[in-house]
Length: 346
Image 1 (cartoon, rainbow, N blue to C red):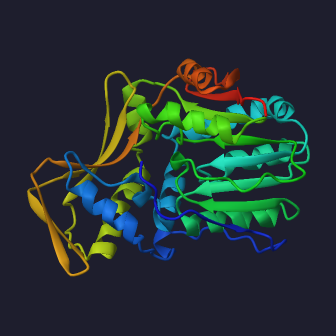
Image 2: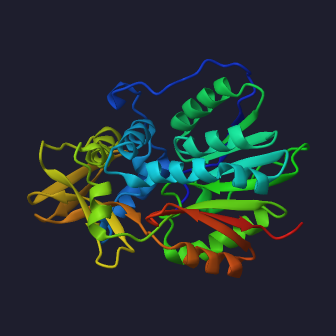
């Protein structure tokens, strides 16, 4: 996965800042323009076979808000089940974190998981949130800072799969605890997982890592999760094209693309895509140049690829990366597992 642009950070040091909830509908949120680097990635990905949109392009401020709403639908079991498991085992997780932890969340999203951990932890000293959408991250950090005014909160804008450098450890932190929640682990291609874990093992030395595993399920269950009855995930997915209309002056008519979800028979791969309903040519304008992309009827643009796995697969990879696997807590149906991994000692 390519980086979305230069990594930069800010410290939300203004205590008691006003809470900043995300307004609805998502169309009420300001539209954002992608960076030159990300726009170049879009043009390149759309010319490949199969056609693609880079997944960070979907998560602008509007897209992030739409995705959050989609994960709250009754058909989307991952977020709901993850929180159930977390609430049941939060005390055990907090004991393993120990006193005065510094929490580092890779792919912060809606920050649902870290809220529960902050409540349960013994005097957490800092929370570092990392995500690709700056405005969405800033809004969520502002809300969290309002609720926890005495907690030191920092935010890093960027793609954690590129192993960005973390800020210096907090002087009062006993150790760092990394978090990868939601569908974050599932979005990492299998061939990239071991190098990522090796980098995290080095970055979190003396600490630990908690990963949510979206475990392999019946393909029909997975397809319903990403093609919910309310159409929320479809709205999120189609927002990628709406962003192309803004960034590249792309002209599209209604009904030219449909949201589609494809899960293979094994349940190990789920692909969100935008299916072209009739033959057409996309004309994307960028710095006076027009890139024409001809699409046949039925051809699709892949937008989000997910790779569910198992807790045992993660533990085996973690051992190879230098972690010492601990317990994995899961729901009775085995849909979601929260896996504890002890990082190498300092």
